[in-house]
Amino acid sequence: MSYHHLTISERESILLLLHNNEDVTQIAKAINRSKSCISRELSRNTGRHGYHAYEAQNSYTIRRQACKQQPKVMKPENHKHIVSGLEQYWSPEQIVNHHCLGLCTATIYRALTSGLLPTVLREKLRQQGKPRKAAGEERRGTIPDCISIDDRPVEAADRNRVGDWEGDTVAGKWRTGCFMTLVDRKTRFLVAKKLDDHRAETLKESICTGLKGLPCNTLTVDNGKEFAAHKAITAELKAQVYFAHPHSPWERPTNENTNGLLRQFFPKYKNFLMVTQEHLNQAIHLLNNRPRKCLNWKTPFQVLTEEVLHLI
Image 1 (cartoon, rainbow, N blue to C red):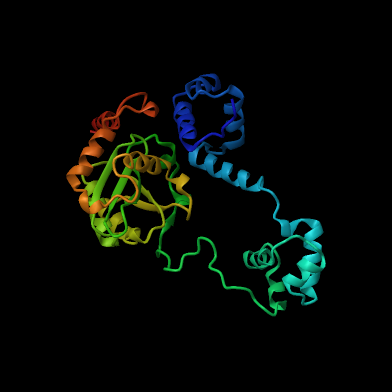
Image 2: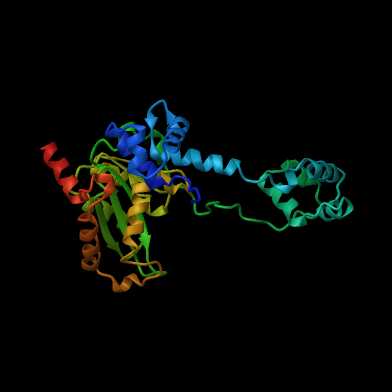
C-alpha cells in the first residue's frame, strides 16, 4: 500500500489525543498510522509550546517546498552562462541559443522578476520583458491595523476552551450572495448566515448577531476585505480578531474543513439566490448534530452545551 503524508485533519486528531494523554501507540492505532510515523511527526514538529496542528502543517509545507526540484536557471551549468551573458548585455535569447541551454527565454525573464536571479541584471536588458503581476499580489489595498495570528494567545491554539472561533465566507455562483461561517475550534459548532453581499458592514452585523449569547474569546479570519470592520467586531463582541497569513488556509483548519462539509449541501457554483436562511439552517442543524470522531463521537451541539453549562 502506498504511503500518504499526514493531513491537517490527522494532525488535529493527534493534537486532541495528546491532550487526552494518549501515548504514541494509542495515537497510531486511533488514526490508523504506524508508531514510527507518529514518532517522526512529534519529534519534527514539537516546539517550545508543545505540538500544534496548524504549525506542524505549515512546517510540512515548507519542507515540501524545499524538496522540489531545483529551477533550471539555478543549476550551476546554466546559472554561470546566464549571469555572465546578462552582465555582457546579451539578451536571454542570445544566451540560450549560443550556449544551447535548452531553456525557454521566458524562463530567464521570470527568474529576473521573481528574484531567482539578481534583479540588478534586469537593468542590462534592452527589452524588459512583458510586465507581470506577481503571484498572489494584492492590488486592492490592505486591511489597516489588523493583528496577526502570530500574536494570538496559546490558549486559542490549544483547543482547551470554548469560544475561540474561526471565520470565513462561502461563495455561491457569481453575484448570487454568500454565507458567513463561524466554527468554534474546540466544539466544532457551526454558526452560519446567508448574506446578499460581501460588504464589511454586512459581515460585521452577521458575525455579531450570530455569536450573540455564545462564548467568544477570539476570532481568527483570513485576509478578505469583507473583514475590514474587524475593529467594530472586536468592540461589540469584546473579543480580539486575528488575521491568518495570506494564502494559509491551514491556519484556519476547523473552518476550512467545516466549509467543505457545508459544500455537500451547497456545491460550488450553486445559485445562492435560490437558497434561504431556512435552507441553510437545515444544513447547520445536520452538521451540529452529527457525531464527530475528534469529539469522541459526541456531536458539536452536545459538546458546546456541556461547555456552556460548565461555565455557568
